[in-house]
Image (cartoon, rainbow, N blue to C red; front, side, top):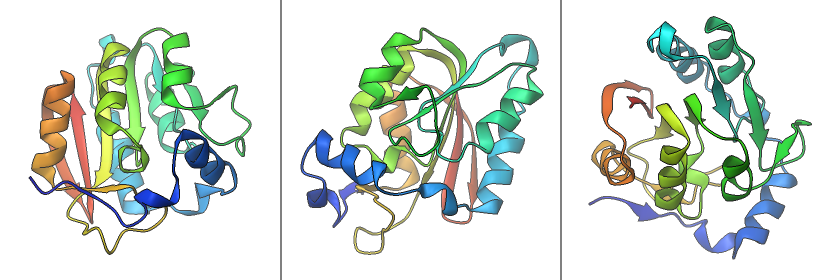
Amino acid sequence: MTRHASHRTGEYGDDEGLRDYYQKNDWSSFVQSDRDEATIRIGKTFPEDEVKTVGDLSAGGARITPEIAEYYHCNPVLGDLGRHYGYRHVGLLQETLPLLGEFDLYVCSETLEHLRDPDADLALIREHCKYLLLTTPVDETPEMVSHGHLWTWEREDVEKMLADAGFEPFEFEHVSVFGIWKCR
């Protein structure tokens, strides 16, 4: 297995340290246009008649999820750990997601690598969605990560985490350094 804690793992200490870190930084400037475009394109390929609700509680600047939700003619439920974006739902996934019920499609873009316990968060997301659209960097080394990444992994590591959480990945695309998965 090639999953590693990054050199940044020790910077956050606990959930409060992580929360403090993300509330002090506006991450909307970290945009990867190729990844965003591919994520939006892939997000519009789930069965249209099965997607009536779309959620994303790590939405950041929220370009990806609103475009996907618009395609499915619904309003996305958005949230984030930081308060920068003015979302109604602010906090850790463990605090916010259980309050919101189930989504037909949950978007988790550039989040997993920032979570202190990505396995537990994926299991929680599994309880609250029918489909998952996931993006995360693959093939980074622990020494090269930046922007608050706590973990690095390869495609196989992510697919094992998804399977362990109860997801079935059924489509994958590699864009630049990012992996994009469609899961049920």
